[in-house]
Amino acid sequence: MVLVLTGVAVVMGGILAYVNHLTEGPIQQQKAKVLADGIKAVMACNDVTVASTDTVCQTDAKGKELTYTIYQTKDAQGNDLGAAVESTTGGFGGDLKILVGFDPEGKILGYTLLEHAETPGLGAKADKWFQKGEKGDIIGKDPKEKLTVSKDGGQVDAITASTITSRAFLLAVNNAYNAYKATPATDGETGATKQTEQ
Image 1 (tube, rainbow, N blue to C red):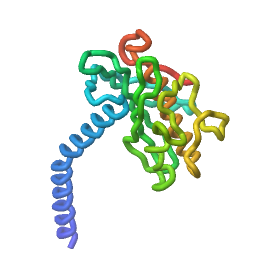
Image 2: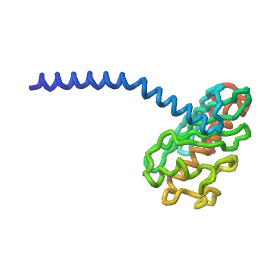
Image 3: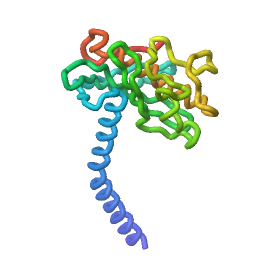
Image 4: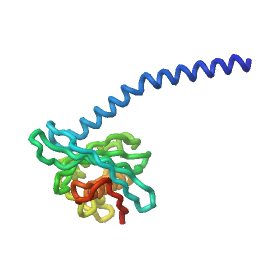
């Protein structure tokens, strides 16, 4: 009996490893496509190329080190469009990962949710709620002045019944802005910049 169970476990482990190996490539390709489409969307330009990729590490208020990926972008003529920044914070249901586009001056061009575990019909509305023309519109805003929800005295309307998600989303945007401003293209330093948030 023990030998049979061991044999079944080994065979099943082998099958799972094989299936994992088969799906690994397509999953990576799908993630790359989602990222490329996301960069086009947040930079509000279909003819965009990533000129360089930088990594910025910052320490949050709780002492946790966070890593941001900054994709410096150019248009077909080689003009600087700004950058798309990946930022992750903890939302209501788990990690909330966004991609935010900033123009060279730091104004928000657009955003997209890359991953989230927010409640469907509530926190999951973040993918539309903060878009141009919507109730919580952040497009065109400059996060130099920290973006906060109106409930906390800020200027952005929170998602109805989802203040925690709204706060997490705006924190991710503010952190993305800080990371963008810490990149070599915007602060004149070389290499990835290490910064501590206040």
